[in-house]
Image 1: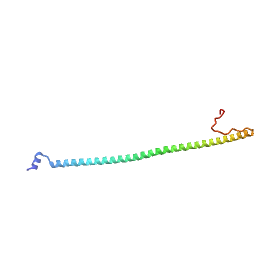
Image 2: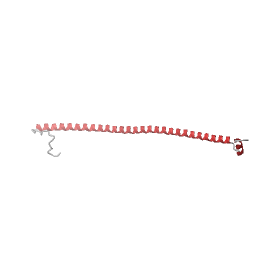
Image 3: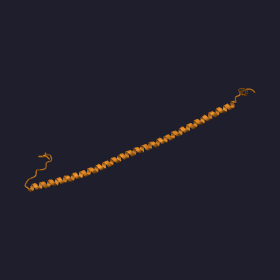
Image 4: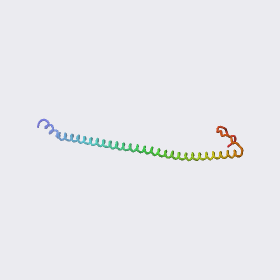
Length: 129
């Protein structure tokens, strides 16, 4: 034997088998690394989809809260308007009753020979109310 075969035989090492083993280990490591990268990519995609879904849900929830708040406020305002309309109608009715009462008093005063004082809203009342 001469050359490289003699060195292999002398050392008792099968370098072809060693090279094959090292190549197999490298190929296996590359496969593991590629699988790990695919897993990371899939997990990242899943997290992104979940985040997007949660964002859409959060926006929808926020819109619902705003809508509910505005709906409650509108209902409150509608009730306030109904109350104010009732109060205004009551005030107008009372004002008409007072005007009718004053008209009757003035009529009675004239029938009794007394001229009622002229209406002057800027003059202060002479007695206590």
